[in-house]
Image (cartoon, rainbow, N blue to C red; front, side, top):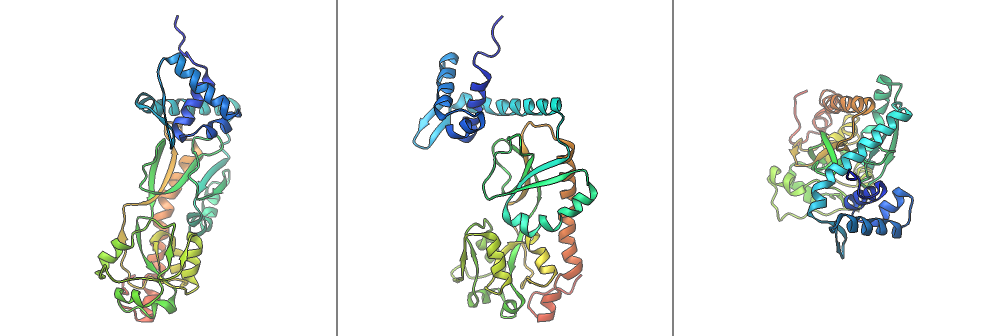
Length: 318
C-alpha cells in the first residue's frame, strides 16, 4: 500500500505556512524550529515529491503553480485539524479572540461591546488591536475585522458596513463652510492611513479638481479623528465611524453629502474553519448593531447641528 503522506506532516505544515506568508521565519516561529530547519523541510519535501514547490526570488519564496492550486486545500486541512483537536480538548466557547484596527476599536466597537456581552454574558471578548493584518489561521485567533475590498487570501469575509463616507469637522469649523468649495479656505486634515477617496467625494460635490486642499497630516487614524474634534480642520471619515461624535455634537457633517466607496469593514474568518457558536453569535450581532448605530444617528441628531448653524445642505428631515 502506498504511503498517503510521502513527506512528514511537519514538512507539509511548513510548506503551507511559507506558501501563505512568503517567508521562512513565520513558519519557524509557528513550528518552534529554526529557519534552517524549515529550509531543510522544504528541500527534502521537494526531493521526495520530485518537483519544485517554490520559486526563489528577490522578494522571497513564491509558490509555483502546482502549490498555488493545492494551497487552499492544505490550509483548509490544517484548519480542520485544529478544529478536531479543539473538540478533543473541549473548545473554549467562552472566549472570542478578535483582532481589529484602532479606529474601529476606539470609534465604534468599544462603545458597543457591552451590548454584546449583555446579550451573551457567557462569552468574553478578547481584543487584539493592531494595524497589522494578523494570520487568522492561528489557533489563538477566532476572527478579525478588516477594512478594504474584502478580498484577502485564505479568509472568508462578510461585509458589515462602512462603505459610506463624507467630510466631518467640529461645529466652529463647520460655521465657516457655506458650500463645498469653501474647503479650500479651511484646514483639511490629511490621514496618511486612510483608504477613503477624496477625489470621489469631490466629484460628487462638484468641486473643481484643481482646487487645492491643505492642512495638518497625521499617520494615525485615531489622532486624525481627535484633530477634527479639536477644531484643527475637516476630515473625511466613514459615516459608521463618525456617527457617535456627530450624534453628541462633537462633529458635524457640514454638507450632508455621503458617497459610497468600493471599500468597507469586513468580518474575516479563516476559509475552511468550522464556525463556532461564539463567532456566529458575534457575526449576527454585528449584522443588527451596525445598521442600528447609523439609524440611531439619523433619529437622534441628523442635521440638528447643521440646522442650528444655518449651514447649506442641512436637512429638515428626521
